[in-house]
Amino acid sequence: MENELAQAYSEVYEILKYIPISYLNKIPKDVLEIFKNKRDKNYKVQINPKLPLEDQKLHRKTLILLSVLNLDYWCKPDEREEILNIYWQNEKEKEDYVVLEDDTNIIPHDQNTSLAVYKQDNILERMWNKIKKFFIRN
Image 1 (cartoon, one colour):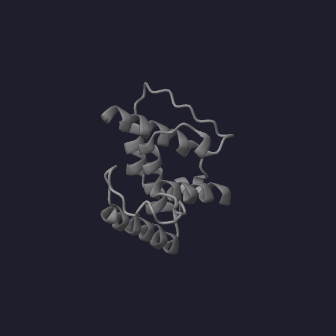
Image 2 (cartoon, rainbow, N blue to C red):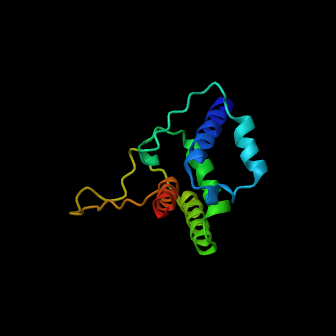
Image 3 (cartoon, helix red, strand yellow):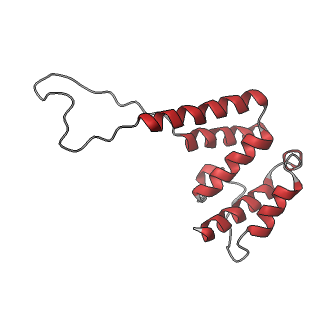
């Protein structure tokens, strides 16, 4: 697990080479030093600057670290509030999540009913979309 975090630091460190300097300057030097010093120097990072981040094979922890950077240093106050509300909403939904056993039937078989599937992006997908918007803005 520690190795995966070091690899995520390496991926973030490499991605930061491609962001505009104005955004890089918003990150404190000590935070940048953490990415530099704690990264896995033997890990070969495969980042193609011509491909969007979503098409790259990044560790989940890399996406989380980028999300934190976005939240703490790059997003505007109103965007920050929106992101924090999304986090809060997801935590509330996680608490209300119920796992049904296979033999549990909540709708009797004899009723003529149909269910609609509603898909809502999870927190990582929403954060990923925010990060994509960040890179598209520039």
